[in-house]
Length: 216
Image (cartoon, rainbow, N blue to C red; front, side, top):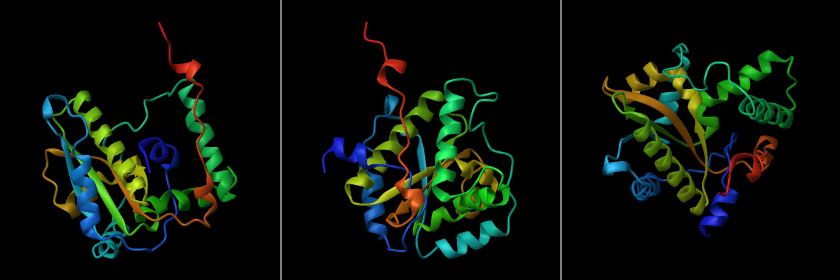
């Protein structure tokens, strides 16, 4: 699989099979992903892996805790156009694929809560960054994440990056033993997509190139 194919194939998977992913494979992908660009070679990412062996204990731990205010603004307050419409459209498309109407708040929350089980993926990864780092280092972490997800795709694995874990920052930090100076950015579910799950058939739209790029 070349890079073009990996970029086209990668998507956010929200239903996984219980097919195992061995720790050596995860370690290899993480090590390769660390070749991602990093300004000044700072390498600000700090990674914690919830392995298949640890996952049941982690899910039980989280179930006994309460959600917290997000550790950071996942979206800017008062999100404006066209970004507001983009966000709204993907949400409607996802719940539509699941057959959950807008009025069914209970079912929508139940779907949201599947985040806290990594959508049943066998492996979960948490990405932390030092609180003292600035936007350039957050950008580095984003490039690390994209590199990791494309490498996973090349390996025949599937992923879902989950900023929703920002609402469990304290609990996750406690479980993984992260020091106080580290801030949880997101989780990543890793495994094999369930090909029969309707939600996995969803492919998000992208705005036309002409709306966001200018050739001068």
